[in-house]
Length: 67
Image 1 (spheres, rainbow, N blue to C red):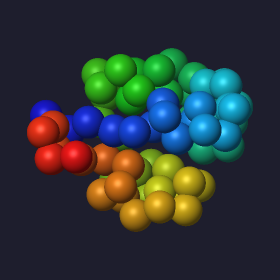
Image 2: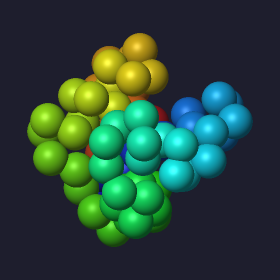
Image 3: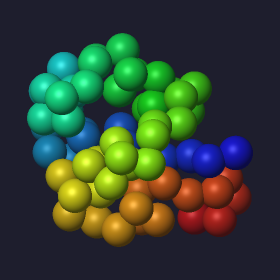
Image 4: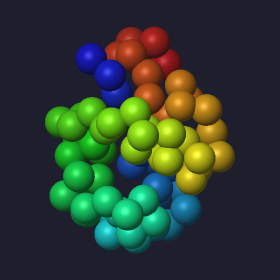
């Protein structure tokens, strides 16, 4: 299963889920689902997330048990 550090990265910046969603031009519900590992974002959105946080994709998204 692919996991992510989105919630941690968002919290480090004191962003609410709605603020992150706005920055990504995506819905708050999608952000919630991604953070809960219930939705795997598209490759395009994954790149946008990595760019927004200034980190490589593999530092944000990873296979369970590898980080």
